[in-house]
Amino acid sequence: MTYRTSYRSSFTAAMAVAALIINVPMATAQPIQQQARIVSGIDEAVKAIGNLPRLKKMSPQARRRLVEFVMGNTLFAMAHEIGHGLIIEMNMPVLGREEDAADSFAVVNALKMASVFTERVLIAATKGWVLAGKRDQKHGKALAFYDEHSLDLQRAYNVVCFMVGSDPEKYSALAADTKLPKERQASCVYDWQNTAWSWDEMLKPHLRSADKLKVTIKVEYDETEKYAIEARVLRHMGLLEALAANAADRYAWPNPFSIVARSCGEANARWSSRTRTLTLCDELVPEFSELFPTSSGSAPRQYQAKR
Image (cartoon, rainbow, N blue to C red; front, side, top):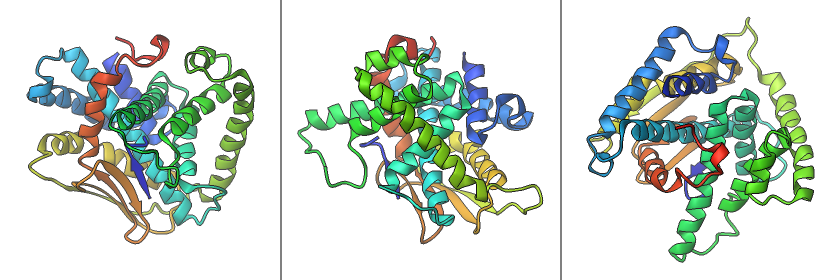
């Protein structure tokens, strides 16, 4: 199961990232030490990417926005893969395509956080799919109607639909700016309610109670020279460790599994049911980074990250 990019305020934002990782309100989120580790990791990333030739001319503020953009997109990709893991390991029924279900898991969790940062994550993912679609069209790449994933623009509009459906008044400007028809806006309310309820019902039997032992989720880094900066920042930030801690604490997994960061030869993230491994490919971070300069001004103004 894969998440593919081709289909695809600083301190405050960092705290929101920590809250998003563990999917609980920020007031009761990560221990102070782990929050500080994430903030420190963002600071290190901002300094580290300043040495890259392509980014040397960017201001520190722009580099920080880039780091937060990439981190937000990475979190969405990992949430998508956790969705695959839950479906497979818990033997959940799926009506339709599993890739669509994994997308909806990531979106539902983000919207239930109801924070400014989670909105940014969803807008960023939407922009990424729109831009990827335009890039493929420019390069003459044929649409893969047969693919296991929905088309780029379909995935983008599904996110918009869920956002509008979750709060039509709050996201009315988003609906207008993305030209989402009025009749579709109305049906998005049902889509959101049905999807959010469905995930709640499916996950209820698999939530870990206090008397159940936590499963072991091992985090590994297979560092390569080519992506040394990305690997160092990711390890220092503890993003994967926080994701593993939340997954172990929140769900009663029937088996232990691993979260691994390694080079895959492609920009990707995937869940392997055979090895019970969630892999974050090193190539995914540079892919998101490449999208950032193009996408930074492509969202409706009121939904862009605050400068």
